[in-house]
Image (cartoon, rainbow, N blue to C red; front, side, top):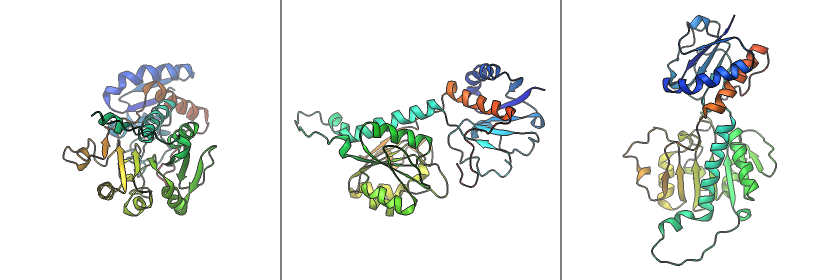
Length: 310
């Protein structure tokens, strides 16, 4: 019997993923049926995105796993109808794209590029930045994306502090964890990068109290999730000068409403959720490898802990 694989994501993605998945599944030696429409009681695997249409998993009586095309799973992890393993997307293309975006904006802040871009009025101010080794960058979140960004920045000789909810050990990175560790990390951070998942435990992790811990004038880079930041608290900290600048790629409501204060704030850079995205050529490989593993009785990659939400 063929393995039945339902593709449940935006229809316009199908022409990109379908040939790639067919090739990878064939190379894996699998007998399969891949389609956008399969009777629910015959589906073995769902290639899933929250905007693909499937919300109720109850009819999928022989389902073996749900394989998400998204790195974030907050829109599905709490779904009580989902009782089979859920794997999130961790792939090389997404990780590389995120690392490039983070390093680019950290270097932008470190080198003071905004000043040189806007100050083209003949003013000659030879004020060189410190070396990277004299600059402390804090990465909140040390999952696959956070670890990759931390290692890249450490390779440039930044003093990198990484924080996570549980203990981690990353060469060249000062790893802290827990609430005491968070306070210690933020108190030293000249630049903060948020790469945490969106869970009840991480919502508003940057709030009035934690923003006050940062050195005055610290800068924030958020390509993680919008709810990680208390927007009102950040705007107050920007207006007071406690925070020097914030570059924000993700928001509670997307697209960011045209009347949102972030658009016009002189110390905020808005980017339209472009820090990284799932690349079909690499994502399809991850999905097909998990299907191969499922059929071979091997452990799935990148399984979500439903209690933690990531």
